[in-house]
Length: 382
Ligand code: PLP
Image (cartoon, rainbow, N blue to C red):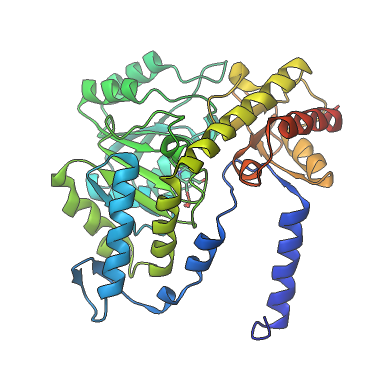
């Protein structure tokens, strides 16, 4: 566009070329619809609307109220929850607000270890969640699977105030009911962060945590295919004031109304039959890739996947995770390096890569295409 600064236009155009010329297998990424993109850049960016629908601190919020209420209602219906907050600017912000709502600094938290597939905001020492709270972590066993008995023992020993379930790099179904049981045994609050799986849950191909967790958080831009952002869901009315005030004024200022408009569109899109087919294809495609990797002697952790995520185990490969990711990038395929359990290589090198099928499935590629892609990856890495 003529109005955009030339340098910005050139960078944008380069990114356009990068996105269209490469195969996108980063598990946390996706391609939002044109409607979501347009709403993200819409006139709602001009509006300040501190507060919540019907209770704003500014005048002129009637349309902001309508769009936020529509987003809340559609989101609640999509996941079967009673209450929701659609204002978190990101997934990390959603988690931060839940920590603030239910914990005091120094309280004990038990979350999944970053190195085993957890997220920074679940209590990592590099993050405020691990610095201001007494954060402890559980990992996975040698096969890369969650060991619920071991987590139970840890929880009984620790007596945490909150347990965080959910992951950034765990390919299998997480047993939410088992986490509920563990939380009940120690009287802990259960936070489920479904960021990676929320699109699959909306599409009915991954178990919904809403009936097991006290609070659920998510991003909106991964498998859910919306704008970048976060959400919080819950069923207990007694939490409403705590959670809403932890977002505003607790940790955020004015909501991003343009992003909330795009979130509403995303939730409407995720409620369609087409999205159910999409979610189903995402998992079919990742399972098809796993089959090829196993056949070709390129092992994947847990021997397969129940989601969009595949963790390739490169501990016996001449390439580290970092080298493999760079080599694939040179060949037009974007993935990220990932640690594996008992990783023989350093944190920087790692012995795994994480592959995700959500983005390329959005582009309409089918199982056959993913099978060919998996063979190509094996060829490159051997
Ligand atoms: N939670 C999980 C499980 C994630 O994987 C991520 C992002 O990768 C986040 C939270 C953070 O989301 P954001 O990058 O929007 O802060």
